[in-house]
Length: 140
Length: 205
Image (cartoon, rainbow over all chains, first blue to last red; front, side, top):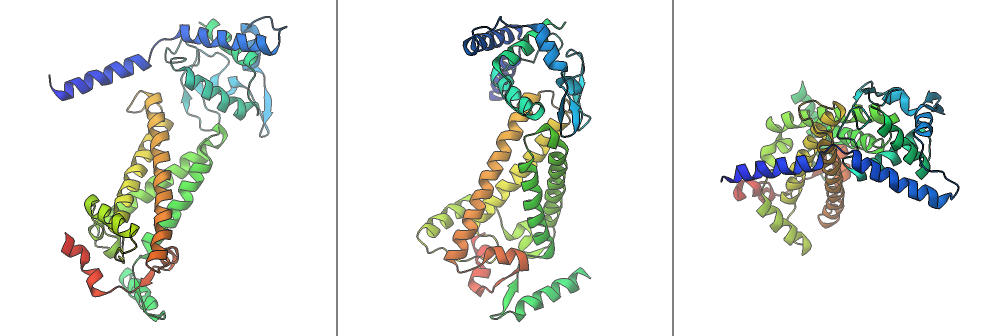
């Protein structure tokens, strides 16, 4: 076997391992946030897809603009979004429409940190993140 | 026209006391400091989605600057020409070894270690700009945003590390060879070198 063939095989193996339809890991992450939320607030009654939806559509004034997650990602997370600053298309958020979402949990947590600071100016709470994922998982 | 201006600049350097040699032409100096500014802007505005357009335009500016510099490097542009600073890692290691002992010779253009870093920075610059373009225009050419994003991230940090090395080297070099390399990149003039030093590159190649 040629070295180039082996390299190619490895490349395929790596890419297919990292890109994987991942409802399961999304659920795992949601469970993790649920546990943290309960730890912080014992009165928490678990995750709510409805609260997640409200959070997704809630408008906040940032830099003089009324923005929500939905501003870029549209009211339906299964649709292709549009960046409100650059106008560039954004791949769908919902794992049902985009199997690459939640394939890499580290990346999800990084995106949460960056986006929460960008849009609501602080970290999101575990409850908010958990609700958010529940909502995305509920979208078909 | 440009030749006249170059002549005038060379004469200006000669007016200094002691007389100096015109080394960095106007293009190189403008390129260098524009790159510093564009790189800094892109770096500062790297995080927030709100600043994405500023980041992208700074990146495109960097792309244009690097492209122009490469064209300039292939032209007969004296010390700015790629021929004036060949890529030779062995010479670079030797140069570093001699510098560590404080007895490396002075080069009027890029020294061998410097030229390795310059080519590495050019490589990182091109890779950063291309990967950045692909991140911004998602789905174009390579349909794997995760991979391109990581590439863009790591190669631009590598570039920053090289910039830090470049700055440290400029300071070291300025002290060791009693030059002011930062000022030289502003005026273009450098203390004249001996004949031996000037012919050094040619001999080594």
